[in-house]
Structures are given as structure tokens and as C-alpha cells.
Length: 223
Image 1 (cartoon, rainbow, N blue to C red):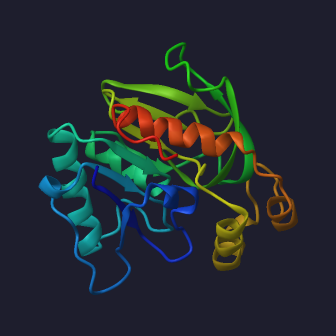
Image 2: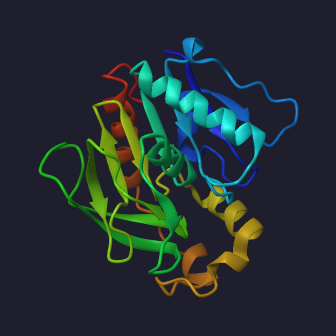
């Protein structure tokens, strides 16, 4: 199965998703080549500090690729910015969350009785200030106190996650180093020390890879 990962900035990288042995396209590099839909079996879109509304040529090309994948019923996973891009392509509205920025670790709660491989609660890393309306025909998977739409699924092969389960201690260090100013004033009241010393749940890796396996129709477990 030919899997591609789109990476927007150096400090938000695949983390545990490196287990998938996917081809990583670094969109921040000027010489990157965006793959065509016909060459992709599954696409994973990572996070980044830019907005879906930014007028960036490669960001517009990325939206077109996402649209083509959805049209052709290809497996697609979006994380943070990736989820927001998918939501917008599906007709959702992406906007600044009036409840504030969620940064650091916090609990999300399951909002459906379906998908038995998903636990009732997850303790995950948040790093976002935007949110989105739930696209038509999408199902909400998780929510939190400060963000109603934390995760959704569209059909059986498209999942969007506002949060980061791909994060490892090493990738978290890179993120904090590059974007530590974003932590100040977050609604979860997490400090840099709180975030850096947090014991990341090993459940997150298992659940994320289960999601990958599900949208791929069982073709790729990541293990």
C-alpha cells in the first residue's frame, strides 16, 4: 500500500507514524513534488501553524489533492491543520475558537457508540486555536470542554483529528522549542514545564494506528 504523509513545517513531523514507512513530502521545501491522486493509496496530512485561509500556493494545491482523494474514496487522515483542511474541503467552516487556544495535554470524550476500537476517553496533546463546524454527513467521534469537534469520521475512510496522538517525547521537544510562545494564555492552563514533563499515554499510539488500520480497510495496521 503506497502511503504518503504531507508535512507542513520541520517541527511537526510524523512521530510514531514513521512506523508506516510512508513517503514524506515536506511541503516547506521549495523543491517538493506533490503526488497525484492516482499514485496514492492512503494520505496522511499533518499539522502546522498556518491557517486554511492563508493564500499559499502549495496549500491550495494540497486542498485540491484532498478533494480528489475524497472524490475517489481513498483513505485519508488529517491531524490538526490536516483535519481543518479536510473539514473545509467537505464544506465545513474553519474559524478561530472563541473559547481560546487548547495547548498541552487534556481529556477528550467519545461522542458515539460506534467504533469499538475507540476508547471512551483519551488523554492527548492539543496545539490549536482554530476549530470547525462538523461537515455534512460526517460523524463526531470526540469532543472536549473547549472544543466540540475534536474528531470526526466521514464515510469509513476519512478521519480528522484536532489533536496529536502521533507525538513522541522527541517530537514534542521540537514543537515546544519552535512554538513555545503559543503556550502562554492557553485555556487548559498548561505551562511549558507541564507539557514537557507529561507522561504521554502509550494508548495514543495504539489508538492512532487502529484508526489508520480502519480507514485503510485493514490493509495497513502500522505494526
